[in-house]
View (cartoon, rainbow, N blue to C red):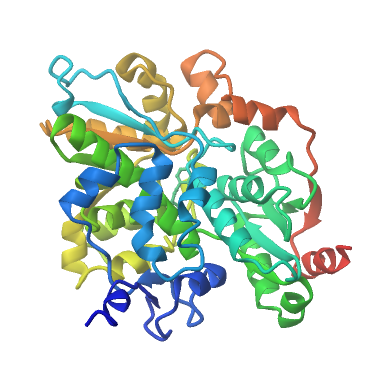
Length: 454
Ligand SMILES: *Cc1c(COP(=O)(O)O)cnc(C)c1O
């Protein structure tokens, strides 16, 4: 009995496609994607009891909550004992929950309030910093000293590349290669991708995001190249990008219930469904999260599905909320895996699509209506909040602010009528010189660059 007890608590990872044997966390983190092409999911979701939540989560720092919520997954990891230290280094900035001004709230009664969960206080001013930084800490700690340099190849439509570059910048044993579509990200997003240098190479590709993604996939599938350069990816479906995001939801929801005696409801601006999948995982682990609502831009594959239509991925439409321009949300496979059938999944979430015209209106009204400046992604979430309030819902809701508005200055500033200054970390990055190189949108061009690296 006692000999078996430790094993009973160990969680292995399986694939959403069912053809990968249960895999230990360290191997799943390094692999990122399951060998059968599916996404890694925990073979069971550990449920924390009320006492564990009450005593260990949301009472201290975000880093302490992160170590507590992630511990069950790391029970057999080589990183188990180092986890608190790795979390302290990765989550060294806050995820504050701020009360917004609202027409709806009764006085200052938080139980019916409107909140903003600000996930943009990291080095590249978007929520992807949290996961990219813990992934970098974990892969750095798992790496053998004599292992060849690993090259992390990222195709990005904006924020992922910057977060991964920032997280691995100057980290021994790693190079980062970023591909982004020239002219399709905001000027400050572009600078955020190009401000690194050293072990980070950034290519402005003369093509679309889909070209970048195809080039990265071709390179990653090229056995010779993989061997020569020890290539890997760090995209939004990697297990190491999903798990760390559970931390800020757990921390926020536990602290909210401690303060207000109630579950917090969440509105998550959504593209690939990675951030929302983490919110869902936090809820399943027993955290006091009420309802989860998804807000998409004009790419409305998810709203149509949750309204009862088929899941029908389509070509990506370019919108003002460019980090959510996704026509085939890759983490959908995880959500489906966690539910018995479509009916159960449709019952678990609601989703609304927001047009560019509405995004503009919401950004323009947000200073007077809520006392905040919103980025285009956060604006999609605010619109969902307005619909919820219009329907008479009086529960506490938090809109997840996925990026700082200063990152999208060319959209936001004309609408609010004043300059929006970048937060300090982003200002640092903008003050550094850019190191980008241009690249043709061809697989051969990328291959040559990767092989030429000294
Ligand atoms: C990546 C991103 C999103 C979408 O997140 P998903 O996990 O892909 O759903 C939303 N807003 C911003 C600012 C982002 O960078």
